[in-house]
Image (cartoon, rainbow, N blue to C red; front, top):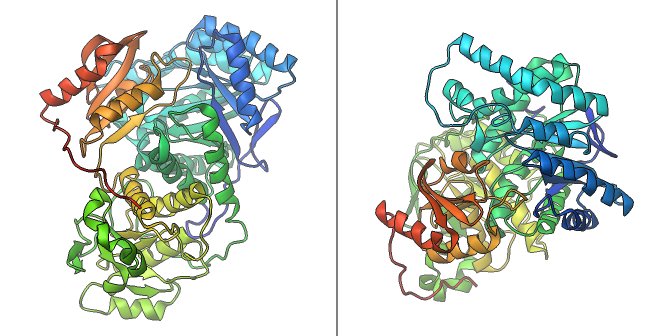
Length: 591
C-alpha cells in the first residue's frame, strides 16, 4: 500500500474540492486553517465575538460545538448575527452522540462534523464478540440514523467531516479491530460508504489522536486505503493532534503529528488544538503551513529505494549498541542528546545544575561519520566496516531534511546507529523561536516516529539551554524518551465543564515532578474515557462543578467537587504507588 507519491520527494496529494461556505478545501486550494470557539453555544453574543476574533487573526473556518438540539437551533442566531456584521467565515457544527442535534445544525451551518465512534453507535467499553450477522445489523442501524443527515446535507449543499477520534472508537469497532489505526480507518470508511450510497461526496476525513505515532499511522493508512479503493475516493483530509495540551510541549507535539504528514503531502486543512485561548492556535497553524510551502522547489532525489520502516506501524530501527563519550547508544538504549563542542563550552560550568536537560555527548568527540546519502561509495564503505558506526547526514547536503535521513536509513545497514539533526544548515538560524521549534519538531519528530534515530542534535537554536530543552521536549512529545510528567489536555470548547486553562495549571503545579507519569485532563466525556487508555490517570469533567477520576480508561471516583478534585487526584496517584514528594532542590538552569 502506498500512502504518498514518494516519501523521498514532496508532492501534495491530489484531492477533489469540497466547498465549505465560501471556502474550498482540497483541489487547488491552499491548506486551510481552522479553530474552534470556547464559549457556551447558547451565549449568542459571545459566540459571535469569539468567531469574529478568530476570523480577524486568519482563521478560515470556525467550529462551534452543538451538544444538544437546543444548541444546534441557536446556531441559526449565531450565523445570522455573523452575516449581519459582514463576517462570512464558514461555520461548522461539532456533533457528538446526538443525530437529532446534527439534523438541526445542518439547517443553519456550512459544514457538520460527526464522529463515527459516537454517532448512533455505542461506547460503553463492553467486551463482546460480534458475529458477522450482529455486526451487519449494527451497520444497518447506523445507516438508518445517518442517512437522513446525508440527504439533508446533500439537499442544502452542506459539507461534512467524518472525523474519527482514537479516544472515542465504538465498542463494535474496538471488539473487531482493537484500539488501532486500522479501527479508526474502518470506522470512518463505514460512514463514507453510506454517504456514497446516497451519491453524497462533499465530505472530508480526519483521524485524530493525542499520540503522534498513532495519529501519523492512522492518516497514512487512511490515505493508502483511499488509494486502493480507487481514484474517486480522493477526498480531502483534515489534520489535527487532539488533546495536545498547552505551551511549548503542545506546539512540539502538533508539529510532529501535523508537520510530518504535511511534509508527505497529506493534509488539506489543519487545526492546532491548544489548551489556550483559541486565537493562539492560528499563528502556529500558519507557521506549519508556511513550512510546507517551503518544500516546493526544494532539491529532490530521483532514487527509488525500499524504506527502512513500515509506514503503518511503529518499530524502532534495530541497530547495534555502541559507546561514545562514555555513553551507550543504539540498540535498546535511550535516544541520546548531542551538542557541539562550542555549545558545551558555554555551559560546562553549570552542567550539574541543568537537571534533566543535560547534554550527554559532544559531537566532536563521538567519531560521527558524515555522508551524503546519495554517495553509494561512502555508504558502501561504512557497511563494509566490521564494527557498527555512528552515522549522520553531512551539513549543506542539498536535500530536504526528512528525505535525506530516510534515504540514509534505507541504504545504511540497520546495525549502524543514526544521529538525527534538526537542520542541515545550522547557519540559517531564525530569530523567531516558534519557527525554530516547529522546524526541529517536524524534522526530528517525524523521523523518530518512523523509527529512525538513536541520537539527536538541535543546531538551529543558538542558546544552549533552549536548544537542549527543545531536544528533550521533542523526545518526550514523540513518546521516544519520557523524562518528565506527561500531560494530555484537550482544548476548551462549549462542552467543557470546567476552566481548562486554570485547572491544567493547578494540576501541573501539583504533579510536575512525577517523572514518567501520564495525566489526562479532559473537559468532558467525548474523548475522555478513550484517551484515558493512553494515560495513567485522568481528570474528567462529569457534570458542572463535578469531576470524575480515572485510572487508565476506568472511572474509579465520581462526582468529586471541583474544589477538592486536584487533592483527590494526588491521593489516587498515591494509592497506586506512583506518588513521590517533590524534592526541595534548585530549579534547573537552562541558559
